[in-house]
Length: 381
Image: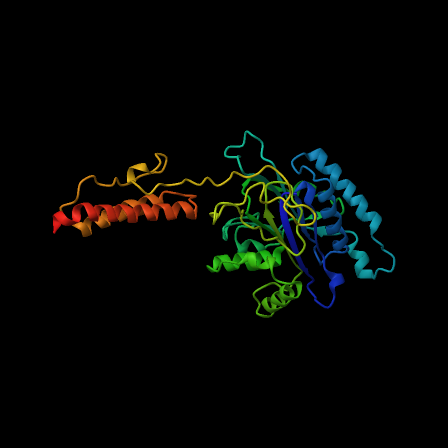
């Protein structure tokens, strides 16, 4: 599994959860996540949406292989016909049977990128296929990278193209769209149906960033209350709402119960480790939520800096400003500031220095100031 996940779902009528006609499915082992939105005005759309999501999770089709896709869709339609119970239908419901059920469909598949993909090192391949107005939001560092296939909330005002449970000789109109790109460990993928997508996109368009990270912590009850409040304020459509959060890892991992498990920084001789981006090892968990054994990550290299002389600074540490060999005519105050500036600029170029190294640089600075003051202080006086 290449992602952690959490799913929220709420029916249009909170008192009638059985009327929920969205659907979702996950195959964590294969990195597949699916959402669908059954069209409520049709009949047996809930069953159709469930069939589609379960089938994609089990065996994702290739929408751009006409023959293969036609066979895959035919089998799904046959399953729908076998599952529905038409006995006891009212006359107006029987009339709807001539058209069947309809649903949108969107899925993502995360996998290792092929070597030929440019910039693939340390990344994850993200493939997404969609028909209709269910939406993928790609978030990185709290910022919206892209929305797909819907890019603006105004697009959600039109009736979407949908998959039908009956062959009405219109399959040639059901065109999928797709993306195939790279994402990074730590990226957040939001799969949602149109009600959530519309709210999120209008928020971004108004300059209001959605705090997606908080949804790892909120309870189901809190989420339901939030959606109900948004509906009451007419900030979200009165419709089924489905929101699936996926956080990209990069290597197989099990989802810890209750959300993402906090990962501790490494301990050892280094008194304080610098903050690091998640990598393939730090994203791996076993079923019990503990870290999965694997190759050890690169250790933080501690450089011991002697404090006797500025000339002893290791050669691989950038030195933006050289320490002067002769006293400045500006006097001790200017000389001291120059030395401090040299040391400060050195420390700014050290990306992964430990606290021990920083303390060594501070001692180096103080020692250099002290020696210059001892050596040249009397002359200036």
